[in-house]
Image (tube, rainbow, N blue to C red):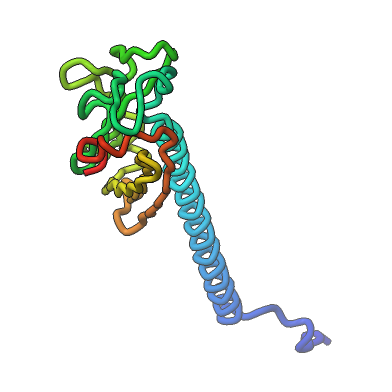
Length: 210
């Protein structure tokens, strides 16, 4: 006589298999969505870190150059509270600010003469920072940031001057705003204050600290 299978011996029904498969797919989809969200957040964090690093590197280099503004090895001979005869006190190439552009010079080779490669400057052009490399004409400007990786949207300078014992001591605040090129909603602002090491005569305030 043929024995009937018990409940334990009966196989899973098609409906049960379909339900189990559906539940598994839902769990798999939820897990995939969570993984994608986590990876997207990690990628955004990594991009922000690169943005912050690139911006800080640019600010650090610019600040280091600006601290030398109007340095000359012969300052002790050519500068006094009532006069400034140094070649680095001549004109706007030695120190001036116009909009987002700053120009300055310093005595690279310590010979007391302003030579062509001793004029510096920074400006913002079409989302990129540029540096001046020459005194002649309008100067030779070179990009120091890459718009593909870092788009600078604002560059501002704020100069403060204080007269002390016949000399003009200056501090300069640089404000930079940048954004991720592919996502304008992700941006970073950075401010840095620079103490200009080389004082100029207070008699030159109208020229170098208007």
